[in-house]
Length: 98
Image (cartoon, rainbow, N blue to C red; front, side, top):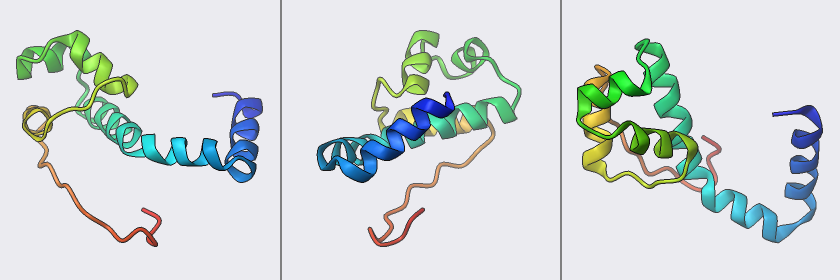
């Protein structure tokens, strides 16, 4: 992500209520995507290897990592198990910036 894009996004988030609402609405999907990529990389797995371990199509893993799909809890559990992880889902107060 370029510095110019980050600056433009930051400005839009500060000044445009609609952009901010849409960005916040998509945040959970992107957090899942970021965590999936980080965990997969920490286990030194490719998408293909993760697909083989889980039985989930590599194309579907790619969609999850791009934030273009919403996985079920069952899917997240399969992914976590294949990466030697436990799945933890939390509800946190909106005032908390996590």
